[in-house]
Image (tube, rainbow, N blue to C red):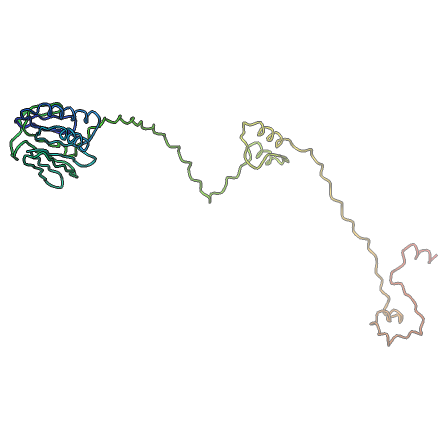
Length: 306
């Protein structure tokens, strides 16, 4: 925020302390009052006061003096501009809301105003309003000069700030070092079947040669260079004790037994071959006689013949 303050030639005093500015006339016999006003201006600025505090302090000094002067003083107050005019003087204030003029005839009374909005420029002077041009190469940054008027322009169009001590600078923020993201694990398809571990080449050769293999190794594959793998493979390669095959027993044919049927010519034998009679047709008064259907062994037949 840059304030460009240019004095206009004339009989008076222009004083600036930061953003607090005062223009006062120097009539004869008022040197003591002018000195008191300049001192009050400097004290308010050093105390960090704003435009309202400056107007209050200058009004108190003028009220204690029998002399009169023409005076314009202003400064920022929050987001507005506080301005006061005493005696025969004027001030044309331009803000973003428009232009406003404060002017008085010769009087001991003053007029105070608080103008809101962003300040654009201020043209002020002692006596009647005029459009006198400021000094071409003159500019007041701080201090006191002779002048009968002023032209203040906000270089960046921003409102003036109150004359307060500068705030300490904020600590610089150090950006954290970028952290490289960890590589994401490749997606694993749920439909892919799990690989079936295959037996090592020595185990396949042993299976092809007819050897019986025993192993207590887990179903999951084991690294070949681990001790567990070496022990498992040694157990796999150990053949079991050979078992001698046992020949199945030879089948034994049943002995042939000759079946001799009774001659059908014999009446008793014909009766045996006849269909069985019912209980009602059987004559239970006849004696029962058993007949052997098997031929006697050869030894018995030879004994009987001798």
